[in-house]
Image (cartoon, rainbow, N blue to C red; front, side, top):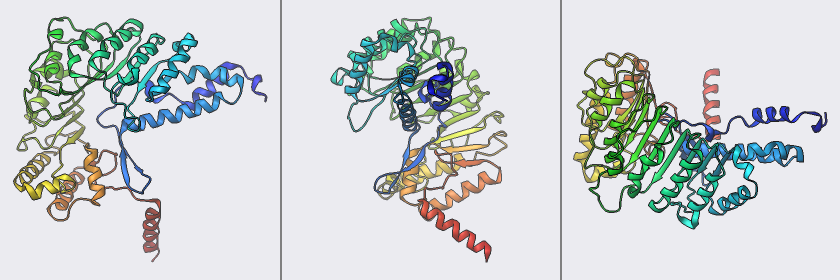
Length: 456
């Protein structure tokens, strides 16, 4: 049947099925249990692809399919224009400027845009949106997209650029925005809440606040002056980096739909906020709580305050002495673990053990005592424990597994503890902990050996 014989509406449905939904159109944030994946590099080494990298790869593949469709014939080019500009993934400043020129020439294209993702490409070395006037291009791009729902910027938005970009989002698409992910300079922290206060339909918000070059004692006067901060639709909130002052403010926010909270303090050791105070307000409604910090937090109080948690992530390096609960937590099904760098004797921790064996002994003791608390009597619904550190898994792969001796014994002991209770122990790829990548030839050899032994 000739192409022209089918109505455009039918071709649109066909293209919908072919490309499926663009990955970056999903307004929800990448969760702590999003899986990494192994890939083989040029020289044969294996490395982990992070979930956000997999998202970019899938989006590029989707774009390639759309481009092939639109280049087939004039009819397909006309039909596929909506899909080509529905989601935008860009990192090259030159491509970004060219895209702005296209939108300036045809203002209707921006009406179809639902997502903008500006990502960092190590090959280009773009770490700040102020490079080569990328911030001006972003403002120009947003101005053409009144129906924008998702805005993600991986490069840092400098203090000089933040106001312009935030004003553009607030002016042109505040009612349509559902998800924002920003990485901003420390000096811009006082501008964040005023920038998003009018975006009442946000369901997901992530901010990565870079640490200042010099230590600051400043607070957040901009936030403290705004008493009525309300996000009625917000379900996911993720705060990362130098967020000490910021965290203290969210206890005053109204977020009736909040179900997922992530607090990643990175290397913060001083001026630590009162997390318990925040959870006293928002904890009872949370289903997912993800806390990554070096200082130890009061896990028994946290789990007591958050009775509806189904997923809880924390560091097994914390000094808890195995005291994780006040009463059995009946709803917790998934536990994610940070830390554990000393547990298996791989990577830099192996070198640290030679220089400072006392630290290694302490950390391993904490890991063992805390892990021993993962039993059904404490967590009746627990079915999954996942080690969340990609760096640890890369080190395990380089070492071909845990170091021999007490580290390998620890892995076997933890494995047996989980297996006896029907709890799955995984790494960050979703595979069983200890499963390392193999080349296809090696896998086929292993499979043939196993088959031969069965025949005999």
